[in-house]
Image 1 (tube, rainbow, N blue to C red):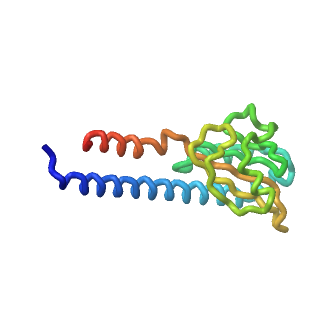
Image 2 (image 1 turned 135 degrees about the vertical axis):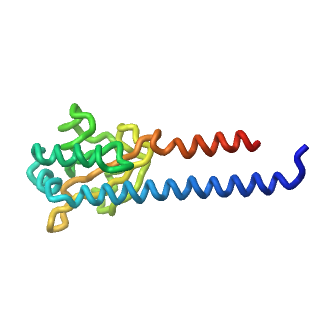
Image 3 (image 1 turned 135 degrees about the horizontal axis):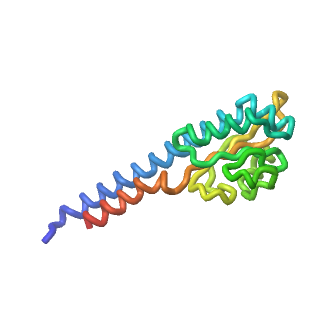
Length: 165
């Protein structure tokens, strides 16, 4: 039989794990936000949005960024009308972005995190505006992380609680 001392220990374990999950989410959000802002500031991205036509250099850069940046599973670049110039699924290039979060960028919002990944299945994502040298909105970048990247910590915490309970 467990004594009354186990309840405070369970509560402490819960709080520690809750804080760990919250910190992990903050780190993921910061990483996504930084990635989106860096991509939004790359000259080839700005040049492509100004011209409206993806170039091989643009596509190669984003292919490398999407696969080479730790914590980024999805990357999209779209113009100010929401037409995708780069997408993880090439069949979506030239088609409207289906999310809603990017609308805030049209109203002048700064880069932000969101759960709206425009139908790409990302668990968390970040949006950043791509601005011309004069400050006008050229388009936006969305980067996201898929659920399997986030879930291991969540599942280990759930498993841990199942074992402790």
